[in-house]
Image 1 (cartoon, rainbow, N blue to C red):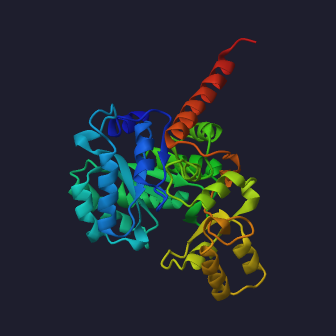
Image 2: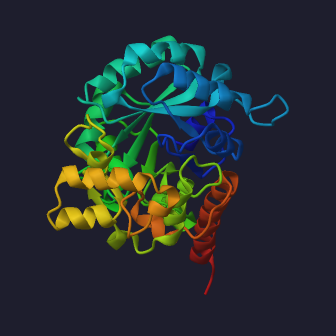
Image 3: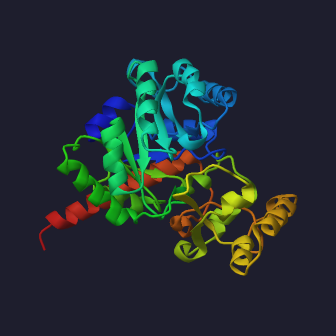
Length: 354
């Protein structure tokens, strides 16, 4: 599958590192830096075409003519855009797909899986087939159904360790990925590249994902600690401070209720760092009072983050492995090259004579 990825995205290096399309956090600078480091950077499409038009124009401007970075087939732009499909109207976004021919469009969280079929069809039609369709899934059965409905060019398999939104009922990537790969191959879908997501933040995780059969990895939480990430300083400080991610984060719908985000399909929730809002909810505090206190603490800015506060800190279970803020390009380089070095070292060990 490496050949398929290289043909579609000629600037990349392997192992492939992708930055997730995190709303507001995925700035033009972040997406461009990841692609310029020979990964694939993504923007979040949002719901407003005018805002997306501006983001796409700003990101494109960061790739100057002197850059050695190669574009994709038919001069497609060397980055992608992701959409939370439940809240986005396809008809409104089609002009953006036509005006800015990006290398890939990532689809996620529709109201109905069948919605993927119409999105995939329109993306391919308006881009003459040059914009590739990526679809994110969280179970084996979802992967099989998505392949049947939309034939994505790339499948992103997200395990339950992921930060932010995902399926409430899923498995860790360590079992989900190989079972998904086996199931796809059993029904003839052996040529679709599969990327691993969920809990991967450094080179050892990348190497592990490749050993499980992934063709590359997606990282979200790790890029929240990138210098180019568009998040509050308090949030970024929490990403660096928090450890023991399996114990200090939890999956819940509380974050959406606090932020009064309405419309997520009921089988989705979000993983975030546990804080005062979670603890008070467990103690019986009403949603109305929790929301009121959350809004009050918003006025404190960066001081409202921490286990004493109520600010939403989306993060995956790998958060404890993140120790410092780094340029996005350095993150791509150290995780990709580091993973390759790990795999090569073990190959040499296996082939050496005792």
